[in-house]
Length: 470
Ligand code: SAH
Ligand code: SF4
Ligand code: F3S
Image (cartoon, rainbow, N blue to C red; front, side):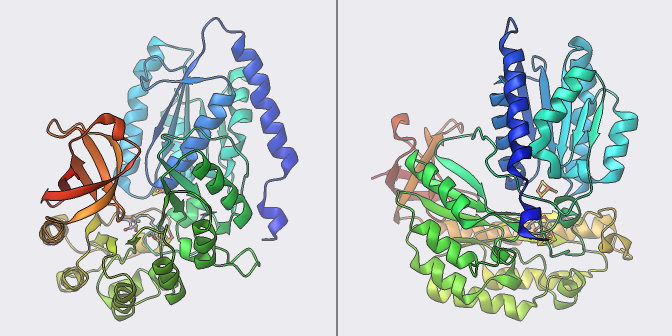
């Protein structure tokens, strides 16, 4: 696609702004300010999209509520990555028939990845008649226009065009907190891992211009943001479509040069594109957190090939070795899929041995879920659910043991942490994060939230650290 076709034209975005202003005029004449609720499923990309949905709602004059009973507009931002995520959405949307019966003027909107799947949009159209508006990720920026169509015409609106995807710059945002922020640097995915629905619902890879990203980071830094996560399905292929001779490592270097007292994280990285230049840049840039999420998915070469991952076990392990040479204390995390179609228990055991070799700090583990329209969903899948579950339990048990050992090694150390919230565990008053992103429970004054502190680690579990302020 030509760059001009990727950017949504300014006139179109201006038109949406006008619609927001018109709605604001209308809404400001109401006796009471109407309320909106936004509920988000799925990954950080969806969280970031929901911040733009809140931004648009806020400009249209809505205040926010967490109570679906009192909301005038409900927006559910859905995920399609596994069946479980879709079933949860359908269950919760089904339950909204009751709130709508009590408040017939309520407008229910569904958006996000699951709505871009034709069978899901069709199901909503036929069987969930209380849903007023369905829109896909490609038309997020059109939400004001679509909402006003529902308000004006009192009819159901479905807008889920099939699209390679474009970029809408300058949408308003209402962020969840001041301390941490998501910054999307690119959208879509070109990798077509055989199990994954994301490329079908999120379109092709497209990168934001570096200057737009830097502008956003500068503003966040000026507002006191301390922890910025750069987002993309595969940030390592950032810039390939820009023709500017800027890759992800260059972008990191530029973000690192923005003045301010903040840490930079990023996700996700695809191992096939993680370059030595990236590792060297991470090691050199003082604001880049000593942390890397590098999803491996499986430890067996035949399975990796069937997944279309474009690396093998040896290449992956070599990357980890080179990274640790440069950053010995780096915190490493990964995603693992158990039970890919045709994976035998013997092949699964290669994943266990990879875990034992790498010793990740933490893991996100999933049982394979067939996604309609993906190549893997067509493969024979003879292993029983019980055997997959047993393998899954073995994986979790091994990782728990490794995480517990890694966390125990922190005890006695004093580290910098960012105090990021009040604690709800009943035993500690504060939560904090190490630079590497590990959770620390602490006691101290609530006024410390938002500050860097030194913490002495006094205890650990397989999921967190416990410490005291120095
Ligand atoms: N783009 C990111 C992750 C996207 S989805 C990346 O490549 O790292 C997050 C994780 O969900 C994936 O890493 C994978 O482990 C898991 N996942 C994706 N599709 C899945 C499926 N069909 N079944 C089970 N897990 C899946
Ligand atoms: Fe899915 Fe693979 Fe793209 Fe990640 S890289 S979003 S797992 S297709
Ligand atoms: Fe889910 Fe879409 Fe993210 S499918 S994981 S919300 S990109």
